[in-house]
Image (cartoon, rainbow, N blue to C red; front, side):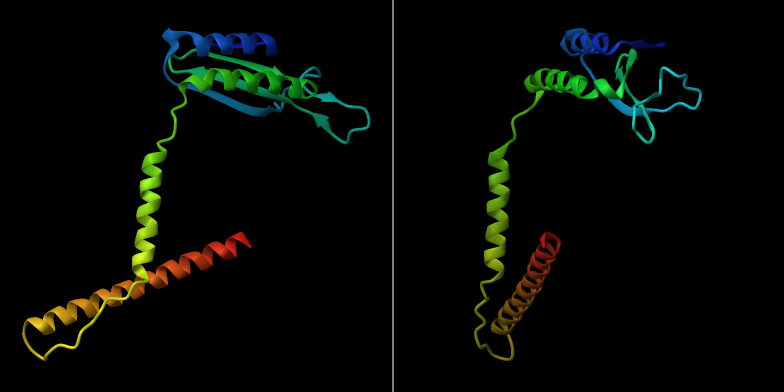
Length: 168
C-alpha cells in the first residue's frame, strides 16, 4: 500500500479515526524522526534569522497492522503546538485500553522478598551433638543452612551497597 503524505491537521484527524475505528483493532506503530533528506528542496529546510544552522522538519509516520500507512511533515516552528494536540489525542485514545496494575501481586512479591531478607539475618540454632548417628547428620544440615544464610547476607549487602553507590 502506498504511503500518504498529509498536512499535520489531517494527520491528527486520520490518527483519531484510526484509534476509534473498531475494524482497525490491532497494532499501530508511530514513528518520529528528523526529516533531513539530501535532495530536500528549499521548502523542506528553513533558516531562521540569526540561527547558526537550518531548522529541520519532523517526519511522523503511522503504520497500522492492516498495512495502511500515512505520514506528515511538521515544521520546527509548529512542533510545540502539534505535540500538544498529539499528546492529548494519545492520552484520550489510550486511556480506555490501559490495564490497571495488579498491585496485590506486587504487594505479595514485596512481602515475600522482605521476609526472605529478614530470615537471612536470623541465625540457625546449632546444638552440640555426638560424633556419629542421627544427631551428627542433623547438626551438619544446620551448619550447611547457616553457611547458606551467611552467603545470602553477603549477596544482600553487596546488592544494597551497589544501589547506594549508583544512587549517590
